[in-house]
Length: 622
Image 1: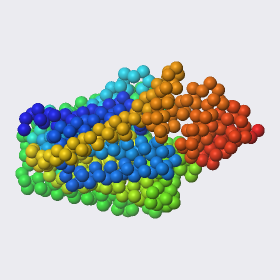
Image 2: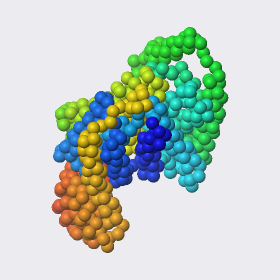
Image 3: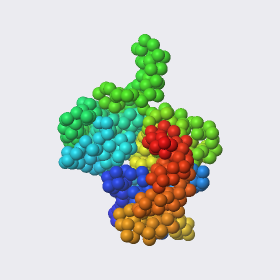
Image 4: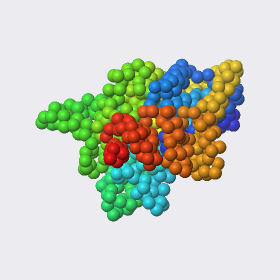
């Protein structure tokens, strides 16, 4: 096997890693399909090229189960647009799931053995570390660093704080696994320890509680599976010690939010993060050179391994026992914590967001459970939660998703969708876990999968393509190849060609047409002279989208001229409160008060807590 062949196979995965970093940096991790569809087209064409090249390998059992589960889930999501409140977004959810299937399958098709898995993992982790370092540097040179923080928490480059944390942390345990490999060059191990520190510092700057819980859970998976668990201790402890020791400066922007020195606090946190990376790499270098020269006797290594396992069990079992022994009224204390979790605090107090439990997640999940009970089999339709929450929610928030992948799936696509999701996630996780005992790298990749699963349970990181794509890319690497470098057998030529052609059709038809439609709609908004032609083609290429009609309405010369376009948009999404409101306001401007009142009342039924709609209705009824 030549180096050129290895570079070709590993390079294909490296291109996907670069695409995920570009999607995070250049598109700010956007969840809007128009922003990530171009990446999906490129990745689909790459996968098709690999299939048509004759070099594609045959997927093993767990990998095949994941792909089939994802494709069936995408099909069910697409079918649910028939009963979803937002058919275009239901279609986008289906396309996103296919996007994840493509990112998962590419490593399966090309990677052969442990060496190529290690190189591919290094490229993915290197991209994430580079993204973290670029973030710290950007905060130091930008004119308004405060624009990249929300309530004292880092939101750059991805615009949602918990998705930003997930993008950093999904690479943490693979980075630790690379640093724990004794046969690696000491300088590379030192760089890996510095990279793990960058990722951990980036997470602390986001102060994501869900990320922290998922990090601990996935860490248990790593140390439970890895045959190199003892060597992974220091590569994990060095970043934890440095980042934990710098808790104050890294979380200082949270305490200084709204103050005059907020920007200075952000600069301080960024300088601290960069300094920690350098210091951790230096300590890691000393550790790696020392580890090369010092070897424990096998008896001592077994004793230390047993001590480590005992310590982990003691922490897991002892923590709750200590709580019940130390707290005077544990039941009352737990009740208070539960009340805090259910209630969004008016003013957060404490040294960081990590010390606050309150959020509106309980209310989101209450609505989703209610929807699942009413529609247990098929759900309310993919991406339908936002509309449902407007009617049933009790908070002032207007969330796009319910902040739990599994409850989102259960409420939106019912028990059928949940079963397919569990298959799509379960097969690759099971495959990674079963392989995790073979090498420390595979254990680190299994831990990355466990991290993604745990964090997605309490947040909506699945909907961010850069995060979900990176997760499935790492899971694909974990399930790729075999122990030997020659890899699995190749796909039969006829099957490979048929699949390659099918993927080309997906790239051009499923991804290409809505992307071109979105581009034409954007062009029409910026160039009204060609708007008629552009919007006509935009509607033809994407008959589900309401955006061409909304742009047409915005370009209309008078309120009355905008009415036909708004009515056509509303016909596609009749349960959209914002469309009823917009049509009602336009009717009011056109002097049709009776029709305006009807539309505004419909908007209020769909969004009863919206004060803007209430004010407009009050104006129409005068």
